[in-house]
Length: 211
Image 1 (cartoon, one colour):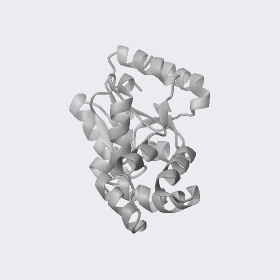
Image 2 (cartoon, rainbow, N blue to C red; image 1 turned 45 degrees about the vertical axis):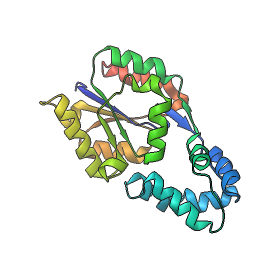
Image 3 (spheres, one colour; image 1 turned 90 degrees about the horizontal axis):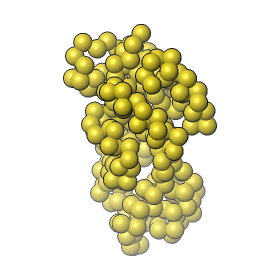
């Protein structure tokens, strides 16, 4: 098996994030408890709507305002509160640069909503210099990992870059077992990544001759 295309997940692979920080920061903006923020702004249904492309950034803001009638919620402050929760996964920086240096085609395959994507795209330029294109984002394609549909879109992206590629020549790195399992069921090669065990990732990449 040889790797001809590599997809990275974004959250907790290339960058890390804190939902506790989001709850605290957003609660200060909207004047509610962190628990209220969790239940109303970060529920599984809200995430599904955002990450499936059914809720725009403006739509999210209108939703928050409707939940809090009579209260002025500053748009920019709310966006800052829910976005300023990410930081670079430092061990991945040299690894990404090394892989990119081999010439292996790279892309992103991520469950993400529009406001988080816009923020991360602007903030983490050191990542996106190696990943300028080939982005498969759930909110843009209307499907989320681990559904078969999003892996099918990812394979189509890989085929445009490497026309003769086979599914098992696509490698995917993700931090959630269900997403790795879904990728393997589609036919991809996949690695389950834990940022605390970065050396294990390096070993697996070396065994696939991608470093």
